[in-house]
Length: 194
Length: 109
Image (cartoon, rainbow over all chains, first blue to last red; front, side, top):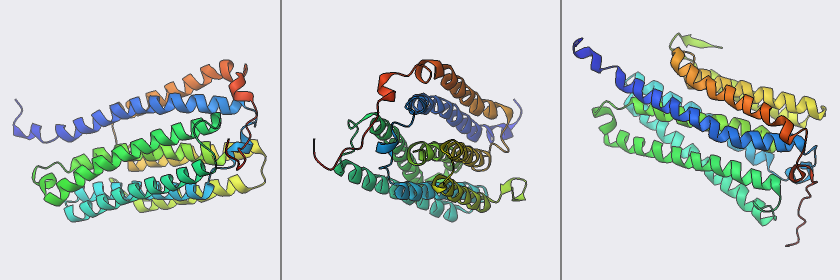
């Protein structure tokens, strides 16, 4: 036994380590998918250009802006937790949730417009990849929103601070940043390379 | 990169740089560059953006070797996987990849 101070540090470290371990498996999940898409696209020799031109670069760019901003708000939330400014931390977390919902709403508008113009997952292999990759990503956004919402409720009730669980926002932030990074690559892969 | 203090990076400045990079990648996509140059530019920019997010927002800047290893190893595996699949898919293309895709006309089919 090395005294009582030893029980202060490990908890956040374990949470972070667990999340990074999970993200490593996520890199392989998205990686396998992306590798096949990249290679098929490279093999296509430009044959997909005509159909790929129909994505909305404007909406894709706005969504990139939304996600990059949500990454800023959740990291500011973590910073506020570390400074003991719990009210500020709660507000930044709220903004992150809102931006996640905005992202999904814009994605929904995109999907609706695309499907109405005849681009569905069975139209051809490009749109098959497009819906599968962005759909898997959107599912991750949805999960992130739910995680952040659970933390936000804890922050509003105050249980998050009373039970000294503020570091969970940092762990949730790691997941959120990862989903942002996936989008950083999906954007040029699906929207800009035609 | 601008940092206010050792353990308090200026997150706002990182965000500004990320947005600037987004604008640059859009500009690169619309410029009359050759396709090869455009593709290289937009993916180099994407990689820089991803590194900025990982380094500053995910705190890889201050994390220990263990977490760095957990983050980097799967990225290396991804690169190896992609390169090792090149001969099968790109140099010996399957028909599903090489067929010319046409945009559906407004007519329902």
